[in-house]
Length: 196
Image 1 (cartoon, one colour):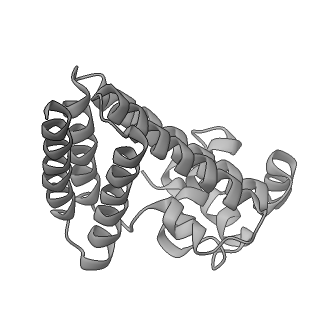
Image 2 (cartoon, one colour):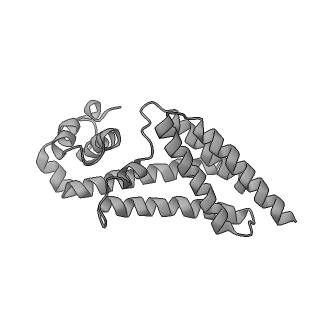
């Protein structure tokens, strides 16, 4: 549902966030002015500044909400699997579903990182989200009893990132399936080495 259709039925903060989410993700944070967000949300200009204080804080809230949604989607998917190997593969399966959604424009955090300034709110949230993804894969790799869980986790993050970039640039959702196959082969190789 677009932010315009939601006008009047959601609290002002939610309408602003929904509008920012649509516009920032579709067009980029710097190319979208506050006036467009306000117009899309159907609220008064003062509401945005009263609730968020500035565009930078609206950007922080937009990215934080995106991070929480990603974390929740992944956690729900992981909960359906018991072995760390299956959980890792499930993350790539989730990516394939996300890449196939209409309107997929890549990773909001990679896109935002291209626009951030050092020390900005966007850079801080992107760094925190990145650290979460890395720690997730390192933790799951550790549960595989990998000799070097940190290295394996970082390699899995590279597959995750590579799939995301390929899906965006090549317009090919199957990049996630290819990354999943590479992750399975990588884990098999590590587990075989551990048995030796």
